[in-house]
Length: 132
Image (cartoon, rainbow, N blue to C red; front, side, top):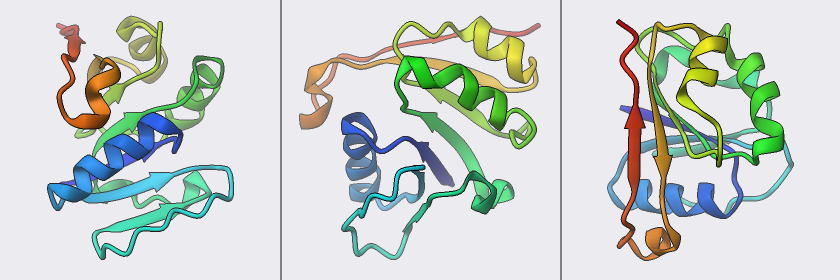
């Protein structure tokens, strides 16, 4: 399973650290040219969304600011495959808005963590809507 994290702000970094501790394969897409100092062999950073090997991805975690989310999802629409699970950590972005853009072909999960996520003790709300 390879996880794509889109956005490397505070939340993206917390999720990356947790996934690397669990030895998951992770790709981070961050359009800013930030340096992410991780030495793990199961990790890579891409700065161009066209550099993502979409067939390798099983889960997409969207961790961007709400103002950037709709344009990003529109740009991802043609890359998202039926097999991808899309998890949105974007505040206020409803599952049905994402589904309307990318279609009802994917499992879309809205994730609402709290501040304790950084310590691994978060009470996290999850929401998904069936398309059938």
